[in-house]
Amino acid sequence: MSKTRKILVPIVLLLGAIQFIPHQHPQGVADTSAKIVIDNPEVKNILDKACMDCHSNETKYPWYAEVTPINMWIDGHVEEGCEHLNFSEWNTASASDRAHMSEEIVEVVHEKEMPMLFYWLIHWEAKLTDAERQAIVDYFNATDPKSEPVTSESSEDHEDNEHDD
Ligand code: HEC
Image (cartoon, rainbow, N blue to C red):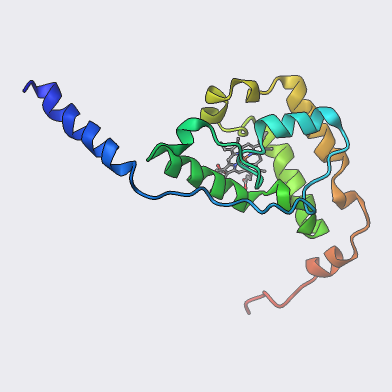
């Protein structure tokens, strides 16, 4: 056996073997009542194509997402993405949490941190144009729930019990 074969054969066998590890993607909740409502079709379309796979319970998995260990890698990103921001559960968040998330969205889209590089390399349509980024920034700036009078926020600011004396 050549040197390359000595290395390749075990790798191929191992890759074959790990396909038998049972694996299930995290199950999304079918309930859509708490899903974010975007009243701007352009913005909705951008979020659908560039964010929802990782930041909602409606991930559309490509065929290779069934291949171990790619599935583990993808699921890790979806789980982590949803921990930070889940558009499917947007309406269950408090007004101040939504305000905070809006700020983060504006920030990561403006800084071109999202969608992640590897994602749009695979999903070419998710590579956003400057105009698309601006549309997201404008939308989440304008609908920032902070602009509504939030009474609980002022009391939170004056919480003194975290002082260490
Ligand atoms: C391939 C999966 C993926 C896609 C697509 C994606 N994200 Fe993320 N996102 C993540 C992960 C993973 C994290 C947490 C780790 C990190 O911040 O890098 C995250 C974090 C975030 C955060 C929190 C940042 C912080 O500092 O806490 C925001 C806001 C966000 N994403 C918005 C978006 C928006 C808006 C889009 C679409 C334009 C998008 N993401 C597309 C995976 C993704």
